[in-house]
Image (cartoon, rainbow, N blue to C red; front, side):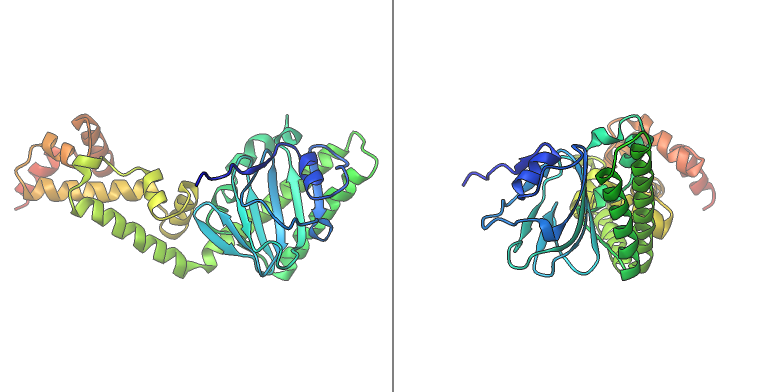
Amino acid sequence: MVKKSPHRFNTISEYHTFRGLPAPEHPLISVINFDDIKLKKNEPDRLVSGFYTIALKRHPEAKLKYGQQEYDFDDGVMLFMAPEQVFGIKNATKEKPTGWMLMLHPDFLWKTKLANSIHNYEYFDYAINEALFLSKKEEASITKILKIIQLEYHGNIDQYSHKIIIAQLDLLFSYAERYYNRQFLIRRKTNHQILSRLENLLNHYFAEDILSVEGLPTVQKVANQINLSPKYLTGLLKNVTGKSTQEHIHHKLVEKAKEKLSTTELSVSEVAYALGFEHPQSFSKLFKQKTKMSPSGFRESFRNSN
C-alpha cells in the first residue's frame, strides 16, 4: 500500500482556510485559540508546514506522532515544530483540544537576531521525542505572551509593532529554554536510563569488534538507535555527565585502544583498523589528543611500568 504524502500548508493563510478560520490579520504570524478551530471528520494522517508552530495544548484523548514516538497530550503540554517536520495526530476528533497555537513564518524573522538564534533552540529538535510539561503558573506566563503578540498585530500596525512582537518571541523562547533545562534536571531517572542504554550500545560496538566492518559509530547513528535526536542526546549527556555524545564515543574508543595496545602485539596501524579508522594517522592524532601520548608511546610506557 502506497503511503499518502503529508497534507501540506505552505502559508499560514492556507492553515486558516483549512481550519475554517478567518483570514489571518498578518500573513506571517498568527495566534489562534483551539476553541476556534474546526476539526474535520477525516483528519489527515500526517501534516507538514512551511512555518514554525508552537502549541500550548490540552487534549487528553489525542496522541501526537512526531518522529519515532507518541506523546499523550496532558495539562500544560508545550510542543515545538520547525518548518518541514512531519507530524500526525491520532484520536484528534474524540475530544476537542483546548489551548493556544502560535504560527510563525521564517520570513517574519528576517533581518532580526532571532533569524539565526532560533536554530540554536534545541527544543525544536527534541520535540521529536519529548514535549515540555508546564505548571499552571508557567502556562499562564506563556499564555500572557501569546495574547500580547496577538493584541499587537490585531491593533494598528506601526513602526514599533514588529520590534515589540520580536521582543515577545524572544521572551517566549527564553522561558521555553528555562523549562527545557529544568525538565532535564527533574527527570534524572529517565536521563540515567538513557545514559545506561548509550553505555550498553557502545559496549556492544567495542566488545563485539564490529568496528572494523561498520566503522566508528557516528553521533547520528547512536542517537537513532536510542530513538533520540542528536541535539537532544548531546544536551542530555552534557547535563548529566558534562560530556557530549562525541566525547562519550571517543572515551570508549580510547579505553578500547589502551586495552589492545597493552594486551596484544597488534601494530598501531592494526589497532587503528580494528577500531574502525580508515587512516592510522587519524587514530594516532585522536589518541594523543585524549591521552597526551602517542599510541606507541603509551605501549612503551605501559611495558616499562611492568
